[in-house]
Image (tube, rainbow, N blue to C red; front, side, top):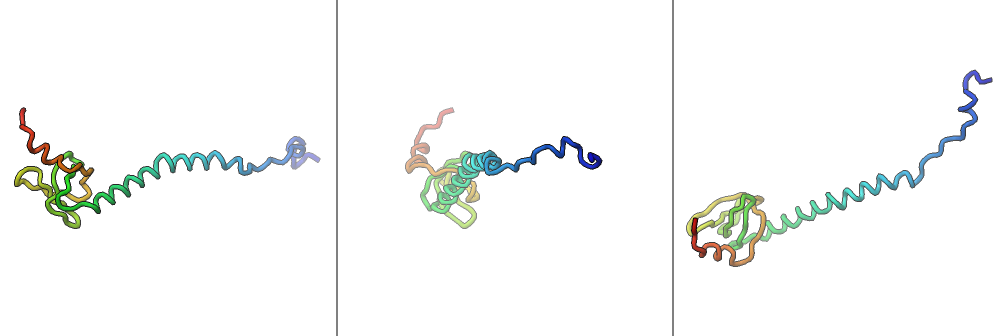
Length: 115
């Protein structure tokens, strides 16, 4: 009677379905991916957004291009920076990289410039 089913396949035990143990490794990978990549990136984006919201006149900042300046005017999309006495530059608001401690701008302006 082995016309339709071979004897070995008929006698084999049924394959067991993987339970929760089969899902632990993929879930662990997803969890590690979240904590190593997604969470720190969203945390940095939130801090950057808060920093840009706190910009005000007189704040000393560094742009993503490395330009140090003092905020002279704040607009919705642009910031006017004083980079030297009487020299102003307009930059986009999201180009501000970091806030500097008070006095950094003046300390660097008073240094003698030697080449």
